Structures are given as C-alpha cells and as structure tokens.
Length: 193
Image (cartoon, rainbow, N blue to C red; front, side, top):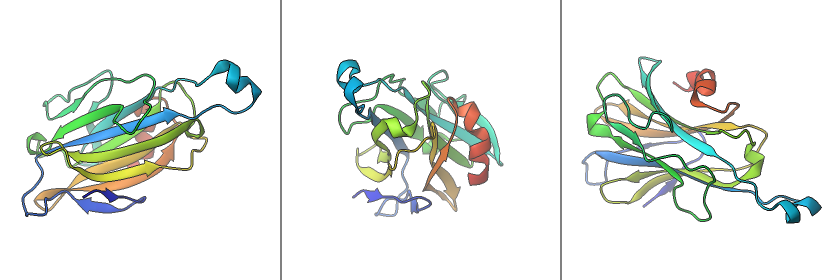
C-alpha cells in the first residue's frame, strides 16, 4: 500500500510485519509540459533533462554523492541506474537511485534526494513529475511525492531518508531551489538536515 506524502510528512521504513527494509529505490519520473501558442505546433515538445541525485550526509556535512557523473557511492551502498536526458511518456521511473540500507555505513545518518534541471528549464515546463520510494525486494511502492504547481525554480530538494532509532524514516521535503547541479543545491539542502 503506497502513501502519498505531502510536504514535510514522514513515514517509517519498517515493514508492517515488524521487519525493516533492506533495499529501497528512489524513482524520479517526469514529462516535458506541452508548449503553448502558435509556435508550439511548429516546434513540438521540448526535451528536458532532469537529474536525480543522492547526497549522503554524515554529521550534517556532505560525505559522498551519487549522480549521473558518479553512479556509485564510494562504499557501494548507493547506486544510480543511469542518466535519462529527456524524461518519459508514462508513469515509469525515468531515473532511479538504489539504496542498500543495510550497507549504508553507520556514519551516514541521512541521504537527501534532489532533482535539478540540468538544461535550465523551470519546473513550469515540466509535468507529471514525481519521486517515489519502492521496496526493491518486493517491488511494492511505499510512498510517492508528487511535484505540483510548476514554478520558476530549476530544482527541488525532494525527500530524505534518515536514521531514526534502529531503522530509517523517509521525509518528503518538496522545497524549490535554483541550480543545475547538486553542488548548486548544497546551500538549499542545509536547512533540511
């Protein structure tokens, strides 16, 4: 059963039978919004390159990052499946980041997921954008956060997973930001740690 998250909401990543999740996938999907006006018919749909990133945080500081130019974390616990340059046409993940929660080193206490428009288009030019968390073992969708409202920003601090007690929790953040790369977003991530 999937939970639709609103900004700031949290869910536990423990299974209903009391066991904990061992592997999750953060999926990102989007489509280019159709252009409007007379020239739209001549030029067609514009390709938009959104990029998913995962910033691994230790004691409030970035310790590692997984993104399209660094597909696997240094310890091997987080892996990006590859760069999608145009987005999709349906509800499938266009980019995904796999997290083996059991292998995440103990000094990593948070993993923040971001999305940015590498080509610089704003979210007003994107439609049907979402991030979701999936139990990678069973394929069951655990939570979904839908990016709504467009806006003139080029990035989003989407969500984070963080240690809580002996397990992990997910928090939807949904904070708009400006930047073409995860490095541009580090100042916007800081208030959410």
